[in-house]
Length: 602
Figure 1 (cartoon, rainbow, N blue to C red):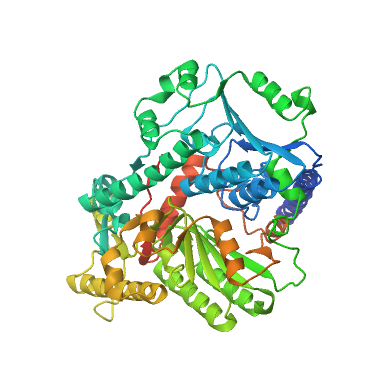
Figure 2 (cartoon, rainbow, N blue to C red; figure 1 turned 60 degrees about the vertical axis):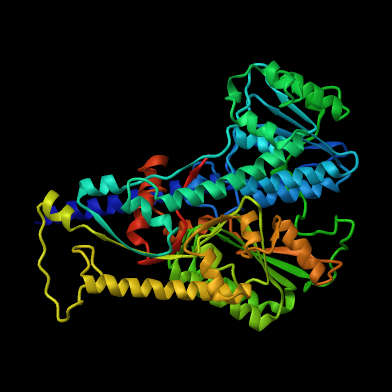
């Protein structure tokens, strides 16, 4: 017994010391990553911007709305500091347009991924840059994806590798349907919805899209493509029908000299030839002599919140001359850490209300497909409180998507801005409760017995189907939510509720059409909303502050050890993680949602 006791004690002590040593090693490693990351940040911030510099846009990664907090997994995988962000890129381009040290822009096209409205915002910024005196843009691509080409099409010179290709193919939208899989598993999705066009539930109840869903997608997708092709046509000085012809001709199979002859690109040459020409444009002997400044490094080296570089804006002397931009990005949920979390966003809005003496106006930047109807209502109400308590102007700027719950939280704004290619609307409500009884008894051999004190004591449950009475009550509940949603829109847009219901029904609209039917006030980017708000406030000097403020101190979450998950431990690969998160969202989804369908557009 004594021997066993000492062996157990020594084993425990060894385990404790081993754990302690591993923790020390882990913290040393983490500190090394931190130092490396911090030094990387400093090198960006210390980027020297000499006279005659060229701003470089490296279009090779996914372009996100803005930088988010850094996770442990990102830090330890050297992901810290990587990525491209729409607010940084566009602000850098606008700032460089008035920076005498920046001579031109060099766009390196290498397969960037971005939302369509984001692409449009970058295209607008590049055209603004090019419109300034003595500014030029040159682009090079081994090959051009449609995304690359759209963003680079405004370049004065568009270089293509002699063995490269240009891919312009128009738009398509693909929806994945899971009903066949659910049938095999013996799972039934019990759907309660309001709105003929509320197609977010169709993947779980149908094997293909309904006629209503197909019609609405055709309408808004054609409208979005019209906007894209018109912008490309303007940039390349051709007619829109010419761009449409390119999209129908399998352009990527054409040899580079044919692409050149048709005016799709302006120059053919290998990368080193393009770089030699770039050096000539920059007034240098060779490419290595150019002070090429990465857009992210440029953004880090200057104060992008200070707009006094604009000819019409003076340096702010009062801190109350601040326009706050509050970002609402991702799905709307009642709880959690990702996307727009109801309680967290409400707290952020109330904090801004408390700072009203220092804020001249608020712009809510929305990029969200919606989500929880309850959380959407809480955010809407908090924004109404903000307006009532502060009396300052409240605008909304929509990104790639601001639909369903994304529109719910937007509808109370004094003015709503969207790009012509923004996906919005989808004013509708649905509820979805799985019934896995068939899976349990037919496939797994599991049966259940329930004891309850009242008829509906176990409702809602996924272990058995709803009774007719329960289904009727759920329909009543969803219809009440729809009535509230349409009333919020009617009050916010100052139109009768019956008129809202005519354009609601869960129907998705593109930004250009949304403006025509009164869901949006103006077409333009976040910059447009900022400039117009400053004009309304008659501000000759102002600056921008972004919220929520992003913390890059990932070691705080490390100390709390609250991020050790399947993702951070690397158990699942990227594709498996996407599926895992999708299943998690279904499992944890609120019973009543206002959310637009997920469509893969390419």
